[in-house]
Image (cartoon, rainbow, N blue to C red):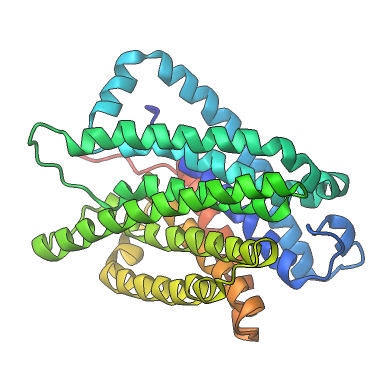
Length: 372
């Protein structure tokens, strides 16, 4: 199979799947310290908890396996200068180069959450270790800023050539949201006030840049869709759902930074935090309903087929985003057994969807040969 940076979407989805049970346990299970660890659930033996831990373990291991494997493939692909230059010069497809950054940003969150869960001593040391972690985070921020400018030039200056952009074009926004989420995690968990302050500044910059690009591209895509009204090709239909995890990333990042500003800086922006979680949760549900109705035939006839294309990973990311927003809404604003039940159900469905897409991605389920 020809390599493309979009293959990193598999690692992104597995990392998101790992975060789902962790977030649920972090906010709904009693625990000592800032981060829940496996010691906090040592006496829990019910099937629901065992299910959460099993999903957490398998998806965490799979995430790092895929990151390592795909990073080696990326380095080999990069050695072929012609392939990479051709890819980066094409404004219709070069947005895929942001996929490795999104996956690495997810790795930061997986280390701060699921990895710490399984290593209690590490979980206790995370706040102190983040004094060193701010440096790789800052480098990731600068790398993303450089890539945004470099790739953005090919979109703005393309010699008048018309380009039909689709919702995959929002992958750079996804990357900024992921970096913002990682930065908010650094800010919240760090013990050193200077590290927390530096993390908050970079996070606010990431949120501002990401939302600015999101507004411009989002308006462009919606206007283009309403103006032309063309039905997207089958492989592009699931890409519409990228809006949901993007909303989740920025909502949770704003929520965490709002908590930091109130606690450390005495600046109250809780109203903004409320809007970022509840309103964006509502918008995400509306967008899912809209796309679900528009693409109902795709779900019925195309998704069950053995054909794989990268946008299918977005279905897992949708469930990740909804589950995280549901947990935050349940804990912070509207305690409800329905939201809690929705979180458990989302993890089960996301696990099944990931498993099915992974079997297609890895070639265990292969498309039927074309008959002449």
